[in-house]
Amino acid sequence: MATLNPSTFTLRLATPAEKLACWRTNSVSWAGKLSPSDYVLRETALGNCTLTRDGGVQYWVFVGPGSESVEDVIYAAVESIRKPVVVKTREGGFSEEWSYGIASVFTPEQWRRRGFARWMMRRLGERFDGEEAGYRFSVLYSDVGEYYSPLGWPAFPSLETILPPSASASSPETTPITTATLPALCERDISVLTSYVRNAPLTPDIHTRLTFLPTYAQAEWHFSAEDLIASKLFTSPPRSPTTKGAISTSGETWGYWVHDYNEDKLIFLRLVSLYPSSPTAEEEEKAVLETAAILRAARTEAASWDLRKVVLWNPDTRTLAACKLVLGDGKEPEVRTRTEGSIPSLRWKGGEGKVEKGIEWVASEKFGWC
Image (tube, rainbow, N blue to C red; front, side, top):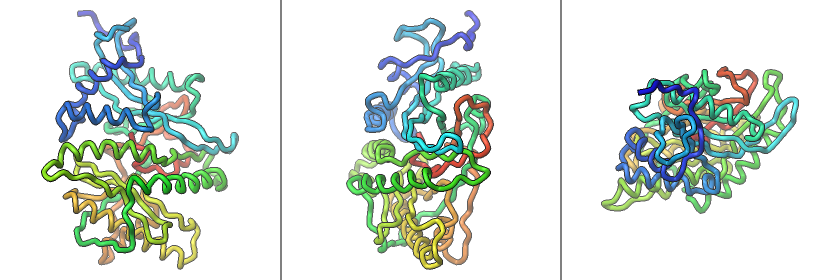
């Protein structure tokens, strides 16, 4: 057998047959509680969402040199999903543009530890760095620590805090959020975030501020997966996760979440507080109380599905104060650096694998994960 030299291989878009073959292969690692056939249904649903249809998602395969046949051996595969972002730089001002989320990096077991994934990601980075791609940065969420740093996607500092579920954590001060009510809230959120990115002065140590926009299309993509999984796992009697979040009676604070049935956790996609960032004491007290009410609603929702925990990414000081209030007895919430699953890794165009100093990533929360 000839020696395989991945430096000569080709990265190209997958054919429909190759896409299906990749799903069947990686179902061994990623199907979780689903059967392989149900996992393929989930991936099909994710590819038909508002975010991903009409070229929003691209499926890539890494194949031998000159390969064009659907019978090609697939040595590695990856997906890219187009996402809207806003960016402000000290030199170039403000812009609305597109970026990419990199997902589903996979090497079949028989081809692992031969450098195929590394070469594939180098090729993908080179393609996205080209002028034709027309974007400045991309993100992936690493499940293998700092593996992607030398390839141009260094891990970005990220924290999380965890709350236990509670069947008794009633929250009468909130109203459930559904798929019917969330789109308008996403538009409000986007308006406020965009205004912050555009208008807030950059501090001397920051040269670039950016955020992935928390569109309803991104939330819908997450909901598509959880809804299908629930339909397969909860059949006697059938159950569906119709409560997608909670909003305060004032309408100034809300959060929406996703049920992770594979890892038995409820994770916030986004937690929003529209109270001022420099509030009066009265405003801050109200903001914390309302945030605590949203957290209680999440704990109750988690308990109703027998999920083990509620997870929040990158909680701010207001959220941590609310967590302390919810825990009671003066308990401080544990905040830890995320070093294992879904570590956000940001590649600036031409990235060299180092966290670029001076970048402020606003709203780095689960909604942006893919």
